[in-house]
Amino acid sequence: MYTANPNRYTPANFQVRCGKSGLHLPKIALGLWHNFGSVDDYQNARAIALRAFDLGVTHFDLANNYGPVPGSAEETMGRFLREDLKAYRDELIISTKAGYTMWPGPHGDFGSRKYLLASLDQSLRRLGLPYVDIFYSHRRDPNTPMEETMGALAHAVKSGKALYAAISNYNAADTARACALLRDLGTPCVVHQPKYSMFERTPEAGLLDTVQKEGLGCAVFSPLAQGLLTNRYLQGIPADARAGKVHGFLRPEQVSEDKLTKVRALGKIAEQRGEPLASMAIAWVLRDPRVTSAIIGASKVSQLEQCVAAAFSAPFTATELQAIDTILA
Image (cartoon, rainbow, N blue to C red; front, side, top):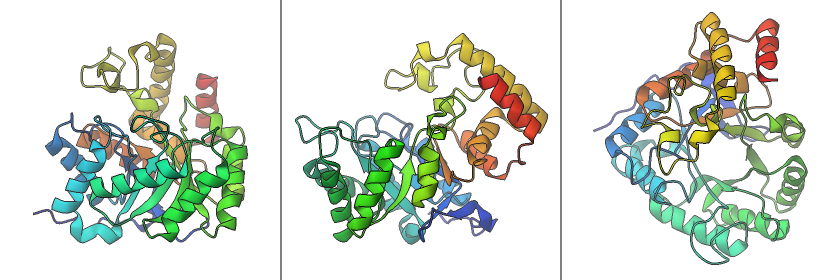
């Protein structure tokens, strides 16, 4: 029988307000994009999830298609909730999304009202929950009026099947419009989830400013560039790494020598700071006050612990930030 660490909320500053809302998110959240599907070892996944909660990680981030097979990560989370975390449900932030391909036909993808609401019902069944805390439109649908997509999010909240509406992978202009629509519907957007890392700095070109202006929280995903911003690939591609898996999204050709040269140089700065590169890379995204939280993945408890440690990294000096920018240029 699992009993949570009684000190999981120490220090208190690990939990931060999500934009202007009353929602609080941990500085580090656990994403179940990889390593929690039906093809993965359940006991290892369970150990990671429970250790995360013991460390104060209250936010578990999912999507309908996470697995593989699609949907199985939600089933895994449902088992955690049923067997270990049921007593702690009201402390947890469970988020899920719909927007990428989940089933055949025109209503199994993108952003129609039919897809989003049908997907949410399926997600709730897999999770074994009456509601999720955050429901996201996973990506902008260019062929569906945004009024319809935002209307579906608003309906999810007003029906009690989600507590908060959110968006992911929207550009700055679409973010501003989505926020305006949701405000008019009485269900304001509370968080945006973009991809952001040392190797993916697109949000700096307007999106982070928009997030701040709209009063949103910002929960960034892939802060380690799917493991590239670690020492994982410096000696080749391990069989158990993302780039070594047939179903992984990181492909071997993306582990380029140019990237590895930058990783080695960044690793030297991390060594001087007295921390692993993974911790420094996450601390780097959290350095920006517009970023609320970093959503990390982990295949081992030790990786999770390195990521959580990033929330307590020393502030960057101006010299360190300049050196990092020079490496990344």
